[in-house]
Image (cartoon, rainbow, N blue to C red; front, side):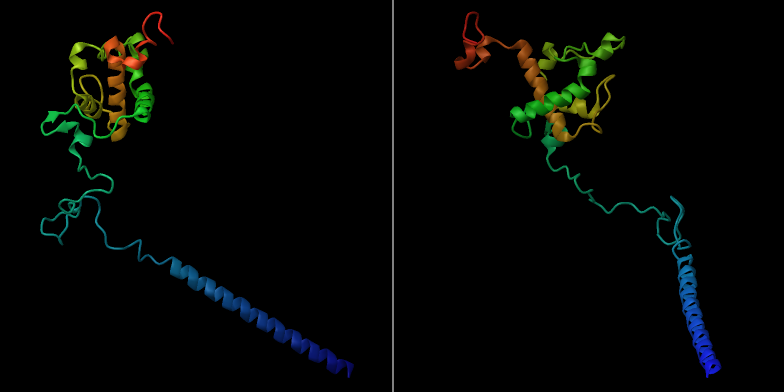
Length: 213
């Protein structure tokens, strides 16, 4: 009886090992099939053109297709001529495309300090740090009569497209920030050439000698 019990146990162990082996084999089969599927080259070998390669499919033989007519990238619809060009028709405008308030002037002062003061100086007289360190072409003094008489759109165009030795800043400065800088330039020009008559009557006493401050 003892020997019979031992044989029964051995048979059960054998069956259990066989069952485990089959499970391992199934797992390996699934793994191998998965790896084989992952290694397929359908996407890697898909038909495609090399950049600017000749095409036998299109009538113009160009694989690089032109944009659909009147296509505009999202966020680049320039439907406001004044905002994007500084012009009203063919001429530069002296109007701003949005209301100029204290927040706009503060933003303009901040951007002016970053991008303009290295050449034009803190108040726009063309005496920035670059000039003081030997830059041969002196930047414009924004307070000369010629520039004080220029319309706001002119300054926007110069910032956008550059002028003379000045590079364009269209890539570095957004459209609305360019207008904010123009607004601040106008404030600088007024501050350096203001008359007492330009100050509202209620505040003139704060500026006159002996007045209340």
